[in-house]
Length: 162
Image (cartoon, rainbow, N blue to C red; front, top):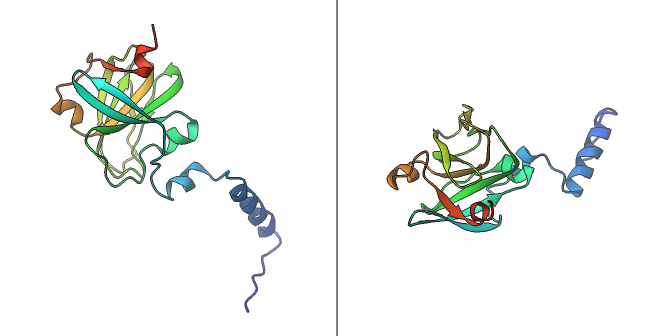
């Protein structure tokens, strides 16, 4: 039998880490390493005649993980990031395996701007004005559907606003 002897300074750190894990307080980056988040709430959005099944990342931790570590995503699926207040939103692709396009979306559902993002990069991609929503889809999806800045998305978060 082998016993593990910890130096005195490591004991409090190990105890804190064990307590955090027991309470489910793991760091978001650590959670992302466990695999993609696939069980978020889903909503249906529309872009003209096109249907989008979007997972909703509303909580801060859900937004931080986003589409990290996901090896593939069906063409009609995406992730809608919902923020509490309109602001300049910036995204990067660290630990994200898929090439994506981010649509920065105003409260009325209109696309403010689109940004193509390359996998596993730390380049910042930002909204051109304050927005509350960002929809990530597989790269090229918006272009294939003829959607661009000024196009409008429909669905629950947008139809509920004046």
